[in-house]
Length: 240
Image (tube, rainbow, N blue to C red):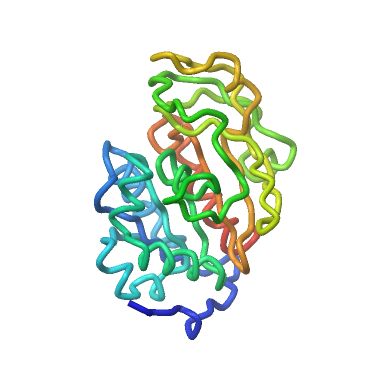
């Protein structure tokens, strides 16, 4: 379809306004992450509303009802396939017009620049095509840019085959800002060792008028880190 969100450019929200969040649920989504996200956001009714949306709804234009969209863990390529070409373009236009995008693990792969199926809204690429690095609690170190926002210096976080990223150097995208790096790594199943330590674990960029946040691990499933997604969501919309 040729649906466009161009007529539905988003007005900036103030720090006090409730943020409406769409959580993608469809092909390519797996694990307990989506339910954890819905529970965390729904527990903050003064700050957020949240509900699941399907790829069919996205293609039909449902994102015009929201301020931000989350793509959770699972398979980035299957999420892309579920959206289809039309759905991926709707998501890109949503962000271009000021919508917030937060991708976790598979959703971060989906945002990256270097796959034929990816959204190409974040100037990051994977260091290796071998992605099955394993599941482990890894240590994060937070950058100076992130400390005022997240109030963390280090933390242990669940990791499950998320992208190991580096700058893509695309002339069409602004450089990303690193908010956290991996301080430890896992490298199972023949994946290359030594490439994960000090690589970006949480990063942010802009695409048109919108902000994009990519998170390789799973803070939404890590005890004590449940505040990371809400804070980054609010920052992606209000800048505060």
